[in-house]
Image 1 (cartoon, rainbow, N blue to C red):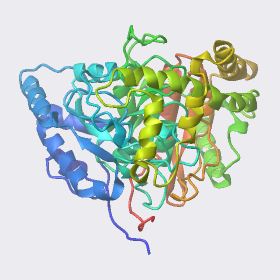
Image 2: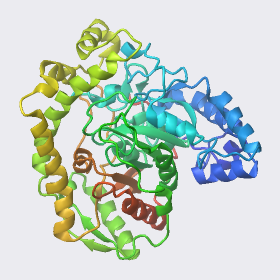
Image 3: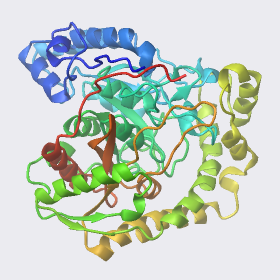
Length: 510
């Protein structure tokens, strides 16, 4: 039987420091307005979100740690505000971090594994340092699919040994998608206004779409990867998650910055919030990548209505702008990720404070703690990576270059040129599937892989619902074209208004 229960909070109640669950949670724009007017303080915001987490996280399992420094930092930022000193657009606004990002706030960085429960970084990740310089408050850590969903081919998205099973707030019996599951659920359910996720292939965009929020996977290197537990230097990136395009873009602006320690670092191209302008779809040529859909008929129906919205805003739709290298990309990606993972993870672990300093040691530790660490699925990806020669595999560099070309130059770039379009669109992913700890995820398909492998930007925006479950539309283009994607995503959002907060929680999924 379905339990009907409101799970979102009013802007008035939260901004007054006394949260209750009804209607929708405040957007970043509303929070900024309240802080500027003096109707709330950052300290009240932190207290309000902490109360909401305490009340509702037991069901959602979205948050794993609360920062012991959050209230102290809020008070400091409130004092700066009274002095007329604002550090940036996110001054005094709380942000959750996925639990694979280093922060020196007394929070362990665990990747969801109990084996890293004593990994307390001595310094902030580069992106966290950027956030703090911009005035954001680290509220705490968000649950994730353990090891960013790169331990088992039979995993359940959103499950970790440290946080348990994150649940979709639109229906507790359904998956939140992974691996930035907790980040997406916390934002969707109003436990935080903003969150940072990470993506190697789909881990920002899939949970964002399935939980009805906005997610941005930026160009590779635009946000530093230093201090993030890695999978692959060639695909990993952090990305902002929010209920609105505006919120996600403000968070993006706060995180970007060229990091000399990141081998693929790129400098931001101006202030991305400057692209939040009306009329951005007029005259834009948009290609429909039909071979990135077809796995969910009802999602495709919603997508056709989204195309009508894009047309109504003056864009030109070019149909069947398919990425012809798609099958070849899928064929090569996984092996190369597993090889890169072995060396990348060993490099990270060597600098940690815990007892496990290598992938081999983690494999042994998981076996020793099998009942806690592997009650539902194993570690066959770990074993595959460990038995490889890592980046010393024959022709590794050449194979990486070939894969990048298939997704980028011969894939997205060639498609944009062939059809004379500015951007490509497709449904992000189908509606959420049932949580299944016996068989693992019932994943059907998505639009995430080409942009992820190429290292190109990708934005997902709520486009509607299949029954009570949200689905998203993906916008992607060439490298460093966040500007045009933000204009398209923002104007689609404003024209369609498809974001709807969760209205109920369904019964126990187990």
